[in-house]
Image (tube, rainbow, N blue to C red):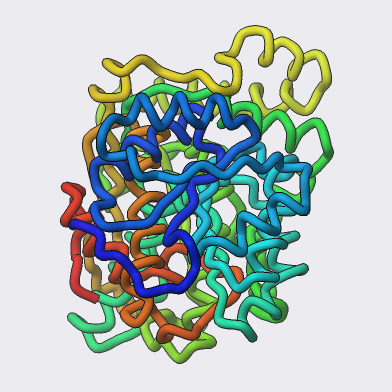
Length: 415
């Protein structure tokens, strides 16, 4: 879907902040190929490196601006946010480098999207900025990468389809993920920072991101799975999914926000859970058991300083990631099942080609920014709805349709 230039009076429609990082360079290449007619700029702390990125993107980036702003320079970030309608940030760990930028966006009523999976940091954004952003109609939408667009949009589309097809509310959705790809250094750096700063203590709260008063009486019933099981709905062995503690919190916030907005799709006791798919048969069962034990051991090790030091020594450093071949050869698939209280079901699917943490994440966050910049009147809740939102509550069907136009599969699409 080609972008259309907005009529906003600011200098730029979108600024890509963190454009010299591994995913940031990919967002710049995506805009160079897809942002015809847009006024956009590259932002980061090094003008020289930003110029190198612009040159590497070819003719499509020739008109892109360059804005130098260090993440610790509040004055520069304030100037950046005041020049654009939308900021797209890939500069993580976000708990280290993102807070001042979001504050500047809220102050200037500038919409914002990013690729964070750092839910404790997002909780802080909600506490500090949700009320003001909602009052001003500013959309602050973290988690617009693989964390957590497939889960969040998929669950919402399925819940809406349950209501439309069966005339009843959706009481539960569960998702099952399959994926192939690599890991970039920034993703691990964010996880290690959460462990090192003690933010991981918040990760166990299933309703960490929910608005006050919307968590159920017995939240332990929604705890993250720790053991494998054979799931009849997916006809496969499934186990804990490493992204689950992020995605589930985002989906639960979406359900609470949309119910407050009057969305009738979600039941009063709506539940959401997700898993990693391993396949059928005894080998799949053994793999599920092994991965479940390994995940538990890995998290335990990362909570200790020596474990984090070892992970840093062995991992790809920030700014680097998988090879082009690995990213191009990757893929992801998220299967979903939604149910009514009487057991009626609707199935959904979100899938795409390309490494999920890089290629797919780039597409998710770039299309999110383009949706904000070019289709404000079509967004959920109307043009003036704001707050610290989620992909589904803040972008909804607009983003879903853009992703389908960009080559991804989202079923059922029509909500």
